[in-house]
Image (cartoon, rainbow, N blue to C red):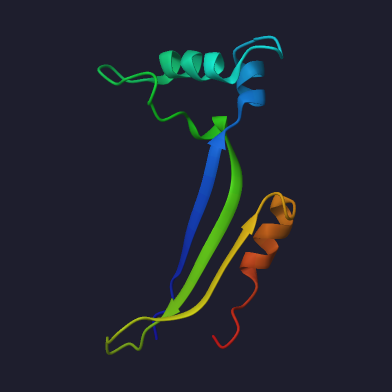
Length: 106
């Protein structure tokens, strides 16, 4: 049997951390920080306003996991469990521990 786990992580820019990185005062608007990050990290020809930021500049807000299985001979995939947690519900360690638990029925 093949039994993959698929993760999806949702993240938003961490403007508090970015302010420290850019040595900007706490009162600097998020939009201004985003503009500065875009100018710093955009590639040649890329619009700084929509440039993907470096991973450390993001804050994880939710994590989701999908557990599935399929017999070795092929056939359709069967979803055995779907779960998600918001970082607001638990700390990141608690979310990761919950996602590591063995899925029910699997």
